[in-house]
Length: 414
Image 1 (cartoon, rainbow, N blue to C red):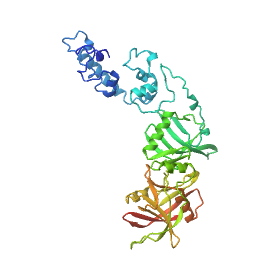
Image 2: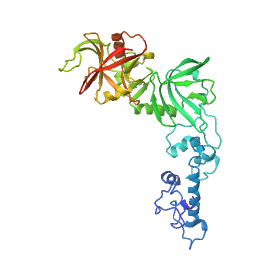
Image 3: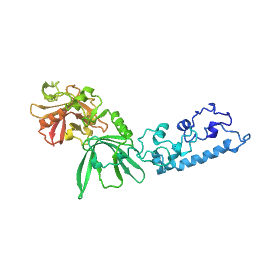
Image 4: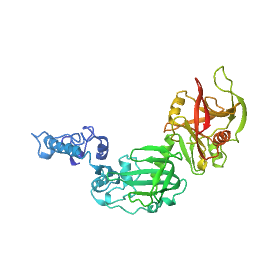
């Protein structure tokens, strides 16, 4: 640092002729493991050097040791613990641009270090302030939390301590369901969505995707999320075109207008009650059956996991969602269709058409490669047409007609 700030060749104070910034912290941010030593400053030739530690040969030897060290430590499992900035990694709390950076009272807090190093991660649950020991956070009550006390819409963090690393999920909590496992009462946590901090993957809940919970487990803990973690989850949800309505306790499409969102939050499913339509689709001299379609106003929602030829209708906990299996979704996607329509033929058969007729309900293609229809009216009418009473029903779909911009399925009970 002495030679970086007071280059022996260029004089004092540090000039800009070596191309490096004045700030050594900025230099550390923008340089590489390979270059951090050998490109920090200009060295004296050995023939004219007064001090050995200002020569190229001296620093090349240091660099060789540095490169060997980095190679030997590349697979060290301790590397995964750096976000906590503890033990070896506490040196990151030293801001080398300030006087007396080595004094503990000048160590930066975790938040300050993250800001200086442009780190975009949630703060660890024990957020160090200034000094060398973890201090009790003012919001420690967030950590005193039992998963059995979680409420609909809470954002919680699941922490699993593996032998090699700590795995964290930020979860938008929906509900807990009990189940029996060899006489032991366990729970299935049903999420609206969750984000894995380790692999940076977002999953949208569907009523089927669950997280098993054993309240007695010692390697897994839950706590309420810190504000930074909650914001991270909401940002990831926004990236897939959704947003959370805490008032309505649901994920909504970002494409909905503020008026539509307000109407949903007031308990109106974004439009008037669906009515039977007199619309009859012309046959176009093809094999598409004549269908009396139901006409709807628009609304949306959110995902599932099914086999070919099956779709689900989920009305649990106000889900109001139809999900088409991934295999048929792949075929439908080739048609580049945007809407779904449902109705009966004159023979009383229930038909589902995926098409570009804007009288239908808009399809949602989610991140898990499924097509969804997110509409209460659509679900209600489909269930009525098939006399389905279950809140989660699996129906068969059989392709009966196909055109350039539409595909039609016959829908039956399993």
